[in-house]
Amino acid sequence: MAADTKVAVTSVLKVEKLTKHFGQVTALNAIDFEVAEGEILAVVGESGSGKSTLARTILRLLDASSGRILYRGKDLLGLTAAEMRATRRHIQMIFQDPYASLHPRRTVFELVSEPWRVHSSVAPRREWPQRVAALLEQVGLPQAYASLYPARLSGGERQRVAIARALALRPDLLILDEPVSALDVSIQAQVIKLLMTLQQEIGFTSIFISHDLALVRLIADKVIVMNRGRIVEQGPTQAIFANPRDDYTRLLLASSPELVGETATKEQEA
Amino acid sequence: MTTEILKRPAGETSARPLLSIAGLRVRYGRTHAVRGIDLDIMPGESVAILGESGSGKSVTGKAVMGLINPPGKVAGSVEFDGMQLVGRSEASLRAVRGPGIAMVFQDSLDALNPVFSIGSQIIEIFTVRLSWSGQQAREEAIRLMLQVGIVNPESRLDDYPHQFSGGMRQRICIAMAIALKPRLLIADEPTTALDVTVQAGILKLISQLQRDSGMALLFVTHDLAVARQVARKLVVMYAGRVVERGPIDDVFHRPAHPYTRALLGSNPGSVKHWSELKPIAGNPPDKSAVFTGCAFAPRCPRAVRMCSEREPDFVTVADGRQSRCHFAQEMFDGR
Image (cartoon, rainbow over all chains, first blue to last red; front, side, top):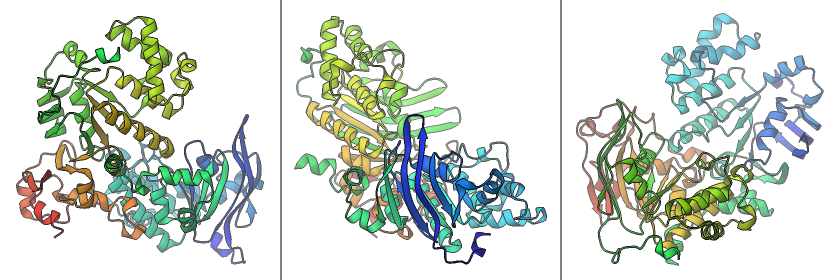
């Protein structure tokens, strides 16, 4: 497992000049960034900014056009398919839509234990019931849910199942692509608190993709702002929010309603 | 010429509500989407309905427009300008839609016909509804597009919906909604599918149109921060019921219902660190559930036995402020 590599590698992931073309369109344009051990890096941007393409390219769900993706010093783009499959055990992803990401004909038990079918060395079959039970408890779901199908669960509960499944392989790096944007505000807060508590307990490194600046401000150590396939600004969260340097970052911050003090009423009375 | 479209009755500023909803219920078989709500909107007033998915907020907007189709059943009263809309024929409702009440939806791509140009869809409103000549309708269409912020409208009349961005499409939907100068605009999550930078522009446009034209606005949203940008009055819905209402900033600063307070506490914009987030435990109730007491009681940190036994009435905690909670006054006083 990755943690065995006790050499002085500080960055879990280092992306260099990563570029991705879709025909004429440059979806990712020479992306450079690093994520350090235990850090939460937020990637913010609007639709079409390339933030989801970035996540998919890192996991090699999409082929990069050029550049390097160094995971603990090893270039993922140079790995064979088999090597990549083995490496994916350490890099897990959670998607936005918990209605689409869970197979409707699998029980919660099957969904959570599924990764062990693929990576059979992680958990021997006799330990599955016990391990699934532990994971369900970790994500705050009742044990009885193990036998249920996703249709019986609410959006927040489904996302908890997706989190349990991602944690089943004890990932080193977790990529979260808008994990709460499909959920209601009150449920969002539950899931965010769960993710952050788990992050503190387990200590995984994460890349958190989001369009929600108010949320990013609460959880990220570092922020990357993307626009049209480029990184327009990156830095510590505090600095980006307090002193944005790029015009696009300023526009994003100014447009985010949570952060605007002015309301319709005040404006009307002015 | 446009002033001829719909002359507003003189003295519309009187104290009579433009829209008056009383005891509105909507159910689909055993599913109760709206469980009896009362709501008045005065002429020119901007009201936001805030609620989470399943709260009945969108269904309320649709019921007002007469858009609940079988097997959905509507009961209660929806009076628009003194006219009862519940039970009215589709033909007679059609006359109200447009000059009376108009609606903008979340998904602008679904609202526009993909095989007709934008121009023809706007022009049709005037030629069909007002029997205008093509030339006159075209001029008005251009003026409307300009009004909602479409640059070079003449050159874009022949473009099709897919040739516009999401934000521009929503602007066109707004243009079509206000074409017949409605006295009430219902906007159902009109910016939810849009990027924040685009959202800001649309909210500004709706606010501006509402103020300039004097139409009333019913804005349906799940996002309190968005509601604050466009509305002065807030109605909070939970499980098909209105649980709190009042001037929006007052409710925001001093909620008088545990649900409203909890919603604020779970909003990331209201805290400095994730650990300060106060999520609401559990899930919203099943829509087929039948309550004897307060629907929020099972998730409420304040709930006592009485809460699950008897549903609270509205308590007036201050001028224009009402909350449906046994502890409304205590909540309001910060106790």
